[in-house]
Length: 205
Image (cartoon, rainbow, N blue to C red):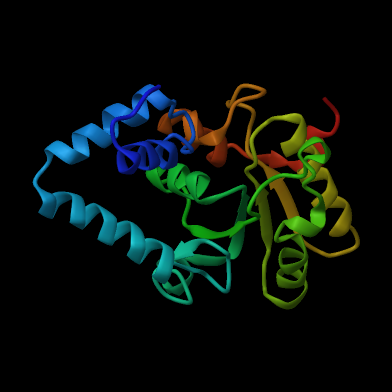
């Protein structure tokens, strides 16, 4: 792809590094930005800079937040004794959209995946175990995607918590094996949370 401007080429190169964006799509997006009023493009760049510079992660659950404690954890009407374990912020958003869960979350920041070089030490597992040991948590809900990596992560945490008096459940398999939570429809995901089962039962499949 030949460019008449080094500035244009650099912008296209940067945009094309985004997931699912090739060079042609990146060029189309960059040219679109050039055709917009400068004030609108400046608003976009300002919002992205503020995101990078000011975003925080909740000290309690590791969810993305504008403050040190996210709105969910700070809400006294939420059930702090029930914690839903998810992979990332997209899963929190998906579950919140169902309006079927009123507890807290714990965002792991990924799943155990030896192929990708992601081990337990790269995830927020230790803080989850410490939270279970020190806080008054009665139920832990595994809501990771039903993939090999998700199941491996669930089992690893389950083994780490053995001997601790806590109810451990997993969402019902209304979600197809191999599916990511963010792509599940709200009704199916909501029912999967409501009809969750003891985690031990899922090991007998």
